Length: 342
Image (cartoon, rainbow, N blue to C red; front, top):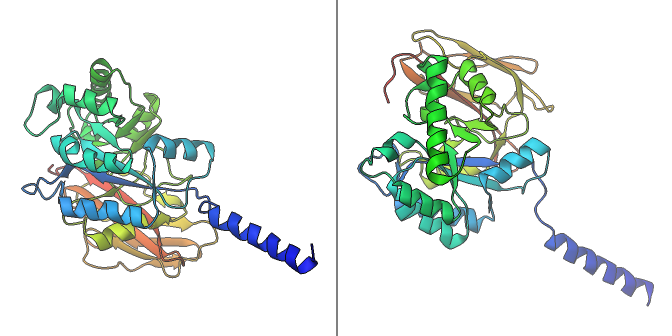
């Protein structure tokens, strides 16, 4: 075969390999959190069906890999690669609309879901909640089940033994009714503290999720994992596209290390950037303010003060940076103070 023709064959073969190759391996994923689907009278915890369908259409059109949550956690724990566009879908509380609205749409696409179940409302047969028979059906159809305590209370403010008992009671009910003992917890309201994180780890769970924004990556504490919360207000397609295109902002030495703070304090938040990323271009927002906060940058360290004293309940900050490829680096934290409401 002439040399020129041989080279053409080689280039053609190489092109086929490159086109057929999967996306570059990644070490991160985005986890989405929902509650209710199509229950428009409760907009704070609901996603409208047209919003949810737009989310799923975007994931499919843009070639995202929707993975079981366990697959993502296994990869992070063992240093295994993930697809470049890895997504997991979760829902909290066990509302009936998970079964009637969300699950049929996910099943039609062959996509998995994890449901974090708070067991007391199921035991009480509360309206709009799934029954144990329905949960067994979902389990048999492939839905993964996670722990969400028994009472769905503010366990951060419970004494340690009460909090432990609440978590354990929920897991025991799941074992009794579903023959499953989950190893992953979602904190009710996304609230946690250093003490609660240690308690959950000591109970033998492998991971726990909050409700602060950001992507999960290899350097994030397994008991401080973020999820992007979706509801009517924060579920519009532009925000969704931004959320699923994020990767973890590599940080270390984040302070304060405690996420349970005192009401009325005005803390200074700080962290250092890793991975050679410049702090220039980082923008941070805090929920007590109306715009970006002023940053104090010294080398790789970023610090900023809460714009106002922390109110009762939950507050959070988000720091973002364009990743140069059309997506965003993202680091978010949630804090909780006494006196908040559900």
